[in-house]
Amino acid sequence: MARGRKSVHAVPRGHGWAVRSGGRTASVHRKKSTAQAAGRTAAKKRHAEHVIHNRNGRIGASNSYGGDPHPPRG
Image (cartoon, rainbow, N blue to C red; front, side, top):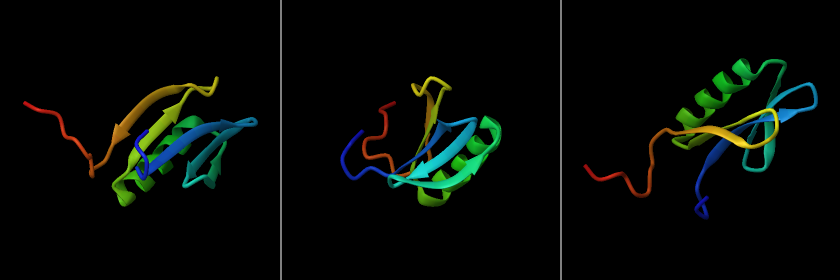
């Protein structure tokens, strides 16, 4: 990820899921779907990238909500 780029991550944490931003846990959820929804809301508010991890910790999906440094051509 580019330096200085804002991002919000939905990551597995124990028996639940956490939403992390700026290296800190913003919220903790029992279900992945609620963590995704909270992360999406936070990413849209901050015009940031929303990164959704799988249970094994690998990136499963990512979405960008504004502020792209290099928009695609076409």
